[in-house]
Amino acid sequence: MQDDLSQPATCIGVAARAAVRLLEQRGVDPARILRQAGLTYEAVFDENRISASDQVTLLELAANELKDDWIGLTLATEVDLRETGLLYYVSASATTLAEAVQRLDRYLAVANDGLDLTVAKGEAYGVRIVYTGIPRHLDFQQAELLALYFVRLCRQLLGRSVTPLRVSFMHHREGDLSPARTAFGCLPEFGAPFDEVSLPNALLEEKVVVADPYLGEIMIKACEEAMAGRPTNVSRLRTRVENAIAPLLPHAEARSDRVARQLGISRRTLSRRLKEEGTTFDQILDGLRRDLAVRYLEDPRMPISRIAWLLGFHQPSAFSHACRRWLNQSPMAHRRQILERRAVQ
Image (cartoon, rainbow, N blue to C red; front, side):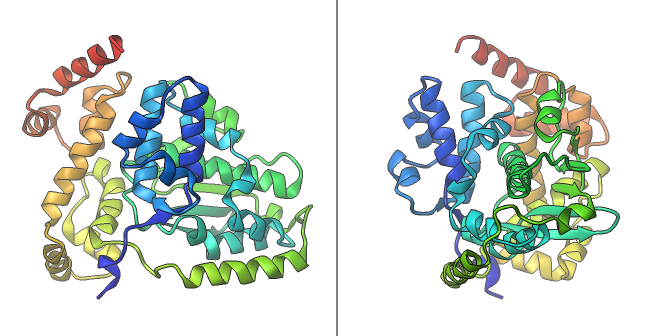
Protein backbone atom coordinates (compact mmCIF):
# COMPACT_ATOMS: atom_id res chain seq x y z
CA MET A 1 0.00 0.00 0.00
CA GLN A 2 1.38 3.39 -0.98
CA ASP A 3 -0.63 5.77 1.19
CA ASP A 4 1.56 5.52 4.26
CA LEU A 5 4.78 6.47 2.52
CA SER A 6 3.57 9.56 0.67
CA GLN A 7 4.59 13.19 1.03
CA PRO A 8 4.71 15.01 4.37
CA ALA A 9 1.60 17.04 5.21
CA THR A 10 1.66 20.71 4.20
CA CYS A 11 -0.45 23.77 4.94
CA ILE A 12 -0.88 27.33 3.68
CA GLY A 13 0.74 28.74 6.84
CA VAL A 14 -1.95 31.13 8.10
CA ALA A 15 -1.26 30.25 11.75
CA ALA A 16 2.51 30.47 11.21
CA ARG A 17 2.24 33.98 9.75
CA ALA A 18 -0.02 35.07 12.60
CA ALA A 19 2.49 33.72 15.14
CA VAL A 20 5.39 35.55 13.48
CA ARG A 21 3.42 38.81 13.44
CA LEU A 22 2.59 38.40 17.13
CA LEU A 23 6.24 37.77 17.98
CA GLU A 24 7.18 40.97 16.16
CA GLN A 25 4.42 42.93 17.89
CA ARG A 26 5.75 41.74 21.25
CA GLY A 27 9.27 42.88 20.37
CA VAL A 28 10.74 39.42 19.69
CA ASP A 29 12.89 38.80 16.63
CA PRO A 30 11.21 35.71 15.10
CA ALA A 31 14.34 34.50 13.27
CA ARG A 32 15.55 32.28 16.12
CA ILE A 33 12.11 30.80 16.77
CA LEU A 34 11.61 30.13 13.07
CA ARG A 35 14.99 28.45 12.83
CA GLN A 36 14.15 26.16 15.77
CA ALA A 37 10.91 25.22 13.99
CA GLY A 38 12.76 24.41 10.77
CA LEU A 39 11.30 27.42 8.94
CA THR A 40 12.47 30.73 7.50
CA TYR A 41 10.76 34.11 7.33
CA GLU A 42 10.72 33.90 3.54
CA ALA A 43 9.14 30.44 3.53
CA VAL A 44 6.34 31.53 5.86
CA PHE A 45 5.48 34.71 3.96
CA ASP A 46 6.05 33.78 0.31
CA GLU A 47 2.53 32.26 0.14
CA ASN A 48 3.79 28.79 -0.76
CA ARG A 49 2.88 25.80 1.38
CA ILE A 50 4.97 24.91 4.42
CA SER A 51 5.31 21.78 6.54
CA ALA A 52 2.21 21.30 8.70
CA SER A 53 4.34 19.76 11.46
CA ASP A 54 6.71 22.74 11.39
CA GLN A 55 3.75 25.08 11.87
CA VAL A 56 2.69 23.11 14.96
CA THR A 57 6.24 23.37 16.32
CA LEU A 58 6.35 27.11 15.64
CA LEU A 59 3.15 27.75 17.61
CA GLU A 60 4.42 25.76 20.58
CA LEU A 61 7.79 27.58 20.52
CA ALA A 62 6.07 30.96 20.24
CA ALA A 63 3.84 30.11 23.22
CA ASN A 64 6.93 29.33 25.31
CA GLU A 65 8.80 32.42 24.12
CA LEU A 66 5.94 34.79 24.86
CA LYS A 67 4.85 32.91 28.01
CA ASP A 68 1.36 32.82 26.53
CA ASP A 69 -0.09 29.42 27.34
CA TRP A 70 -3.20 30.28 25.31
CA ILE A 71 -1.48 31.60 22.19
CA GLY A 72 -3.66 29.45 19.94
CA LEU A 73 -6.75 31.28 21.20
CA THR A 74 -4.92 34.61 20.97
CA LEU A 75 -4.07 34.02 17.31
CA ALA A 76 -7.51 32.63 16.44
CA THR A 77 -9.10 35.76 17.88
CA GLU A 78 -6.88 38.15 15.95
CA VAL A 79 -6.46 36.45 12.55
CA ASP A 80 -8.61 37.67 9.68
CA LEU A 81 -10.75 34.70 8.67
CA ARG A 82 -10.30 35.64 5.02
CA GLU A 83 -6.60 34.74 5.27
CA THR A 84 -7.51 31.10 4.70
CA GLY A 85 -8.37 32.15 1.14
CA LEU A 86 -10.26 29.55 -0.88
CA LEU A 87 -11.38 27.68 2.22
CA TYR A 88 -13.01 30.80 3.69
CA TYR A 89 -14.73 31.94 0.52
CA VAL A 90 -16.07 28.52 -0.44
CA SER A 91 -17.65 28.36 3.02
CA ALA A 92 -18.87 31.95 3.11
CA SER A 93 -20.63 31.56 -0.24
CA ALA A 94 -22.73 28.59 0.98
CA THR A 95 -26.48 28.92 1.47
CA THR A 96 -26.76 27.43 4.98
CA LEU A 97 -24.34 26.71 7.80
CA ALA A 98 -24.77 22.98 7.13
CA GLU A 99 -23.66 23.47 3.54
CA ALA A 100 -20.72 25.57 4.73
CA VAL A 101 -19.60 22.75 7.05
CA GLN A 102 -19.98 20.22 4.23
CA ARG A 103 -17.69 22.35 2.09
CA LEU A 104 -15.17 22.64 4.92
CA ASP A 105 -15.28 18.87 5.19
CA ARG A 106 -14.53 18.37 1.51
CA TYR A 107 -11.97 21.13 1.01
CA LEU A 108 -10.04 21.32 4.30
CA ALA A 109 -6.98 19.83 2.57
CA VAL A 110 -6.75 23.00 0.47
CA ALA A 111 -5.56 24.74 3.65
CA ASN A 112 -3.97 21.82 5.53
CA ASP A 113 -3.68 18.33 4.08
CA GLY A 114 -2.60 16.86 7.41
CA LEU A 115 -6.10 17.35 8.81
CA ASP A 116 -9.53 15.94 8.12
CA LEU A 117 -12.97 16.96 9.29
CA THR A 118 -15.81 14.62 10.14
CA VAL A 119 -19.35 15.20 11.37
CA ALA A 120 -21.01 13.20 14.16
CA LYS A 121 -24.79 13.66 14.04
CA GLY A 122 -27.05 12.93 16.98
CA GLU A 123 -28.59 15.05 19.70
CA ALA A 124 -26.07 17.67 18.60
CA TYR A 125 -24.07 18.33 15.44
CA GLY A 126 -20.49 17.45 16.31
CA VAL A 127 -17.74 18.77 14.04
CA ARG A 128 -14.54 16.82 14.68
CA ILE A 129 -11.06 17.79 13.55
CA VAL A 130 -9.04 14.64 12.89
CA TYR A 131 -5.24 14.60 12.57
CA THR A 132 -4.36 12.32 9.68
CA GLY A 133 -0.91 13.45 8.55
CA ILE A 134 0.66 15.13 11.60
CA PRO A 135 1.12 13.90 15.19
CA ARG A 136 -1.71 15.10 17.41
CA HIS A 137 0.08 14.56 20.74
CA LEU A 138 2.63 17.33 20.02
CA ASP A 139 -0.04 19.93 19.34
CA PHE A 140 -1.93 21.94 21.94
CA GLN A 141 -2.00 25.42 20.43
CA GLN A 142 -3.05 24.71 16.85
CA ALA A 143 -5.85 22.39 17.99
CA GLU A 144 -7.33 25.19 20.08
CA LEU A 145 -6.76 27.71 17.30
CA LEU A 146 -8.63 25.53 14.79
CA ALA A 147 -11.60 25.06 17.11
CA LEU A 148 -11.94 28.78 17.82
CA TYR A 149 -11.44 29.61 14.14
CA PHE A 150 -14.39 27.35 13.35
CA VAL A 151 -16.57 28.95 16.04
CA ARG A 152 -15.63 32.43 14.79
CA LEU A 153 -16.44 31.33 11.25
CA CYS A 154 -19.90 30.18 12.34
CA ARG A 155 -20.49 33.51 14.07
CA GLN A 156 -19.40 35.46 11.03
CA LEU A 157 -21.40 33.40 8.53
CA LEU A 158 -24.59 33.73 10.58
CA GLY A 159 -23.96 37.33 11.59
CA ARG A 160 -24.68 36.75 15.26
CA SER A 161 -23.30 35.30 18.47
CA VAL A 162 -22.93 31.52 18.45
CA THR A 163 -22.13 29.50 21.56
CA PRO A 164 -21.26 25.81 21.10
CA LEU A 165 -23.07 23.24 23.18
CA ARG A 166 -19.73 21.58 23.88
CA VAL A 167 -16.07 21.95 22.95
CA SER A 168 -13.63 19.14 23.63
CA PHE A 169 -9.90 18.57 23.16
CA MET A 170 -7.82 15.42 23.32
CA HIS A 171 -4.93 17.08 25.16
CA HIS A 172 -4.91 17.76 28.89
CA ARG A 173 -4.70 21.09 30.67
CA GLU A 174 -4.43 22.15 34.32
CA GLY A 175 -5.00 25.42 36.12
CA ASP A 176 -7.13 28.40 35.17
CA LEU A 177 -9.28 27.55 32.14
CA SER A 178 -11.16 30.86 32.09
CA PRO A 179 -9.50 32.08 28.84
CA ALA A 180 -10.99 29.09 27.04
CA ARG A 181 -14.41 29.63 28.63
CA THR A 182 -14.35 33.28 27.55
CA ALA A 183 -13.29 32.47 23.99
CA PHE A 184 -15.85 29.74 23.34
CA GLY A 185 -18.67 30.82 25.65
CA CYS A 186 -18.54 27.43 27.38
CA LEU A 187 -15.92 25.55 29.36
CA PRO A 188 -14.16 23.03 27.09
CA GLU A 189 -13.51 19.47 28.17
CA PHE A 190 -9.85 18.48 28.08
CA GLY A 191 -8.61 14.91 27.85
CA ALA A 192 -11.57 13.96 25.68
CA PRO A 193 -11.67 11.19 23.04
CA PHE A 194 -12.06 13.71 20.20
CA ASP A 195 -11.29 17.29 19.19
CA GLU A 196 -14.85 18.41 18.63
CA VAL A 197 -17.15 21.44 18.52
CA SER A 198 -20.80 20.51 19.07
CA LEU A 199 -23.54 22.80 17.79
CA PRO A 200 -27.35 22.71 18.14
CA ASN A 201 -28.85 20.84 15.18
CA ALA A 202 -31.23 23.71 14.45
CA LEU A 203 -28.29 26.06 13.98
CA LEU A 204 -27.14 24.18 10.90
CA GLU A 205 -30.30 25.06 8.99
CA GLU A 206 -29.83 28.81 9.44
CA LYS A 207 -29.04 30.88 6.37
CA VAL A 208 -25.58 32.29 5.78
CA VAL A 209 -25.97 36.08 5.82
CA VAL A 210 -23.52 36.64 2.96
CA ALA A 211 -24.54 33.65 0.85
CA ASP A 212 -23.64 34.07 -2.82
CA PRO A 213 -24.49 31.02 -4.97
CA TYR A 214 -22.74 32.47 -8.03
CA LEU A 215 -19.52 33.02 -6.09
CA GLY A 216 -20.05 29.58 -4.60
CA GLU A 217 -19.92 27.93 -8.01
CA ILE A 218 -16.69 29.74 -8.84
CA MET A 219 -15.11 28.85 -5.49
CA ILE A 220 -16.12 25.19 -5.72
CA LYS A 221 -14.48 24.97 -9.14
CA ALA A 222 -11.32 26.63 -7.79
CA CYS A 223 -11.23 24.29 -4.78
CA GLU A 224 -11.73 21.21 -6.94
CA GLU A 225 -8.80 22.30 -9.09
CA ALA A 226 -6.67 22.90 -5.98
CA MET A 227 -7.65 19.51 -4.56
CA ALA A 228 -6.72 17.79 -7.80
CA GLY A 229 -3.13 18.88 -7.26
CA ARG A 230 -2.91 17.67 -3.67
CA PRO A 231 -1.84 14.16 -2.59
CA THR A 232 -4.80 11.97 -1.70
CA ASN A 233 -3.17 10.76 1.51
CA VAL A 234 -0.22 12.33 3.31
CA SER A 235 -0.25 10.08 6.34
CA ARG A 236 2.45 7.61 7.28
CA LEU A 237 1.34 4.63 9.31
CA ARG A 238 3.54 5.81 12.20
CA THR A 239 1.54 9.03 12.48
CA ARG A 240 -1.74 7.16 12.44
CA VAL A 241 -0.49 4.82 15.15
CA GLU A 242 0.68 7.75 17.32
CA ASN A 243 -2.68 9.46 16.97
CA ALA A 244 -4.48 6.22 17.86
CA ILE A 245 -2.29 5.58 20.92
CA ALA A 246 -2.51 9.04 22.52
CA PRO A 247 -6.13 8.91 23.80
CA LEU A 248 -5.62 5.34 25.05
CA LEU A 249 -2.68 6.14 27.32
CA PRO A 250 -4.53 7.31 30.48
CA HIS A 251 -6.62 4.15 30.42
CA ALA A 252 -3.55 1.90 30.05
CA GLU A 253 -5.11 0.45 26.90
CA ALA A 254 -2.39 1.39 24.41
CA ARG A 255 -1.81 -2.12 23.08
CA SER A 256 -0.85 -3.08 19.57
CA ASP A 257 -3.87 -5.35 19.10
CA ARG A 258 -6.24 -2.55 20.15
CA VAL A 259 -4.58 -0.02 17.82
CA ALA A 260 -4.43 -2.48 14.91
CA ARG A 261 -8.14 -3.17 15.30
CA GLN A 262 -8.86 0.56 15.37
CA LEU A 263 -6.87 1.01 12.14
CA GLY A 264 -8.70 -1.88 10.49
CA ILE A 265 -5.70 -4.17 10.08
CA SER A 266 -4.36 -7.25 11.87
CA ARG A 267 -1.73 -7.03 14.58
CA ARG A 268 0.69 -8.95 12.36
CA THR A 269 0.11 -6.57 9.44
CA LEU A 270 0.63 -3.59 11.73
CA SER A 271 3.95 -5.01 12.91
CA ARG A 272 5.11 -5.76 9.37
CA ARG A 273 4.19 -2.36 7.97
CA LEU A 274 5.81 -0.51 10.86
CA LYS A 275 8.96 -2.55 10.28
CA GLU A 276 8.89 -1.34 6.67
CA GLU A 277 8.93 2.22 8.05
CA GLY A 278 11.89 1.34 10.26
CA THR A 279 10.13 1.25 13.61
CA THR A 280 8.06 -0.89 15.98
CA PHE A 281 4.91 -0.36 18.02
CA ASP A 282 6.87 -0.36 21.28
CA GLN A 283 9.30 2.26 19.94
CA ILE A 284 6.42 4.50 18.90
CA LEU A 285 4.72 4.08 22.28
CA ASP A 286 7.92 4.87 24.16
CA GLY A 287 8.71 7.92 22.03
CA LEU A 288 5.19 9.27 22.38
CA ARG A 289 5.30 8.88 26.15
CA ARG A 290 8.64 10.69 26.25
CA ASP A 291 7.34 13.60 24.14
CA LEU A 292 4.29 13.99 26.35
CA ALA A 293 6.33 13.68 29.54
CA VAL A 294 8.58 16.55 28.46
CA ARG A 295 5.51 18.63 27.61
CA TYR A 296 3.64 17.93 30.83
CA LEU A 297 6.70 18.50 33.03
CA GLU A 298 6.90 22.03 31.65
CA ASP A 299 3.62 22.79 33.46
CA PRO A 300 4.39 23.18 37.19
CA ARG A 301 0.65 22.95 37.96
CA MET A 302 0.50 19.32 36.85
CA PRO A 303 1.37 16.85 39.65
CA ILE A 304 3.92 14.14 38.85
CA SER A 305 1.42 11.47 39.87
CA ARG A 306 -1.10 12.80 37.36
CA ILE A 307 1.51 12.84 34.58
CA ALA A 308 2.30 9.22 35.35
CA TRP A 309 -1.40 8.35 35.02
CA LEU A 310 -1.81 10.36 31.80
CA LEU A 311 1.08 8.41 30.27
CA GLY A 312 -0.39 5.05 31.25
CA PHE A 313 2.01 4.15 34.08
CA HIS A 314 0.38 2.28 36.95
CA GLN A 315 2.80 3.72 39.50
CA PRO A 316 4.72 7.05 39.70
CA SER A 317 7.84 4.99 40.35
CA ALA A 318 7.50 3.36 36.91
CA PHE A 319 7.24 6.82 35.36
CA SER A 320 10.28 7.99 37.31
CA HIS A 321 12.29 5.01 36.05
CA ALA A 322 11.25 5.76 32.45
CA CYS A 323 12.08 9.44 32.89
CA ARG A 324 15.60 8.62 34.04
CA ARG A 325 16.02 6.49 30.93
CA TRP A 326 14.69 9.27 28.63
CA LEU A 327 16.23 12.35 30.27
CA ASN A 328 18.96 11.01 32.57
CA GLN A 329 17.21 12.59 35.55
CA SER A 330 14.12 12.23 37.69
CA PRO A 331 10.86 14.00 36.76
CA MET A 332 11.27 16.49 39.61
CA ALA A 333 14.87 17.25 38.66
CA HIS A 334 13.87 17.87 35.07
CA ARG A 335 11.04 20.17 36.16
CA ARG A 336 13.37 22.14 38.45
CA GLN A 337 15.79 22.54 35.56
CA ILE A 338 13.02 23.94 33.36
CA LEU A 339 11.85 26.39 36.05
CA GLU A 340 15.40 27.57 36.76
CA ARG A 341 16.00 28.17 33.06
CA ARG A 342 12.79 30.19 32.81
CA ALA A 343 13.72 32.25 35.86
CA VAL A 344 16.89 33.60 34.21
CA GLN A 345 15.26 34.38 30.86
